[in-house]
Amino acid sequence: MHSDPSAAPPAAAGPGDYLHGLAAYRAARRTLLAMLGVEQSNRDPLSEFAERFVAALWGGQLAASRTQPHYDIETPNGEKIQVKYLANASVPWVNEHLVHRLPGVDWYVLVLFEAFEVVGAVGFPPDLTAICAALGKQHPHQERRLQFTRRNWLAIRDHAEAYRALGMRIWLPPFT
Image (cartoon, rainbow, N blue to C red; front, side, top):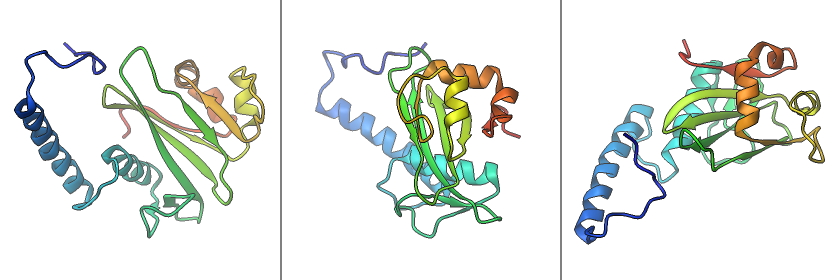
């Protein structure tokens, strides 16, 4: 049974309860960061995870600096990849994402989490025109922007081959 993350804490929760919860999170965070090979990081652990996950999927190398602008990964053939993530509860999604073209970047990859489980990763080429058209988008600047929603994710997931034919890269579980 999943609790609603937006729900208020129990009325009886005191400062010690919050500190206990933070200690449990801190231990789990340290475990994840150690597995990722990042012993010290104040960055969001999902960002750290997403970058390494995409590097493994793509066979690329992380950029020399984890905080440099524009790209996070370079592929063996020199392509540059920007990695972002989108996290939501299973349903409904409350978060969406603006996919956008970046100068000097060949791919924009979005790792999708639902209830902290990776449910997919989608790679967008620089020109988004055909993808926006296939998704029935109406917003401006479709060649360089895509307002990504749950409905878009479901369309791409359920018709992956059609979107791959438009130039996307799509990874679905079990990611082997």
